[in-house]
Every structure is written in structure tokens, then in C-alpha cells.
Image (cartoon, rainbow, N blue to C red; front, side):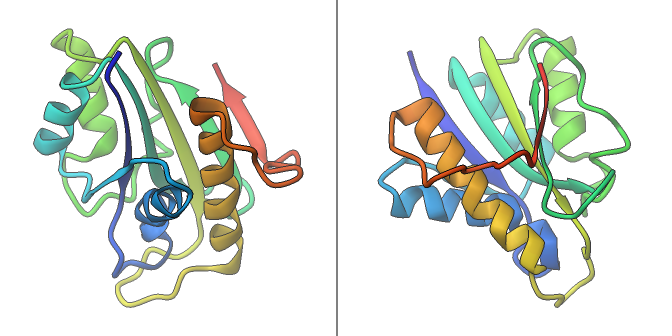
Length: 162
């Protein structure tokens, strides 16, 4: 089974860097992960090229910044209100939902959304999101690659919608 991890975001927009930073942290842990901007058509091709995909992106905070939400995108549509911070008119949510309509979703698509606070140009990563990047990387490494996570990787910060 082909498997890939994709981190999406923009390093120049504060908390929007979360997905990219998770991908970088996973590579430090020895887990292969790719970085993408979240441009929909490139992302759709990546989704169609693997059987199992874990996708990580920053989302609009519904609660506390740094909270991590997990969706099984094969079972539920991604919520529009969570994925409203894209610099693209056609971003991650739209790519996933169009792939669903076209029958091009991978067999398994798990989406990790890290709630951000600041998505302004040239903003710094917030401390809450920095902590969530580490928790998400540890959880993905443990759940999908058998790596040992640090103690209490999520400690209640996950709202799983599966």
C-alpha cells in the first residue's frame, strides 16, 4: 500500500506554517513527509497517487489555538469554517471535496487540522501552535509508523471527528 504524509501551509504567514513544520519534524524523526503550499490541483494529484494519505494543515481556531482536530475525510466532508484561511481561492478543503466528487480520494485520508491564531504576512508562529506541531508529529509517527511518541503526545488537545 502506498502511503504519504503531506504538510500544507505557508512559512510566511505565521500559524499557517503548521503543516509544513509538522512535515519537517516528521522527517527529523525519520518519517518521510512532503511539503506543499496547499494549491488544490497539485494536492489533488498527490491524493490520487497514494492509497493512504495523512494531510496536515492549519485551520481557523474554533476554540483554543494549538488544538488539534482529526477528521477521517473518507467518512465526513471537511468543514468549510475550519478551512477558511487559505491564501488560495481553491485550497485544501476544496481539493479534498473535489477529489471526493471525482472519486479520486485515496482509500484512507486522515486530515489533521492545527488551530491557528495569526495568519498575517510575516507573523511569527504562536507558541500554542509550535507545541501542537510537536504533538501532531509525535502522534502521526506513532499511529502510522510505530515510532514511540513522547509522553502524552496530545494530552486531551485532540477532538477526533471520525
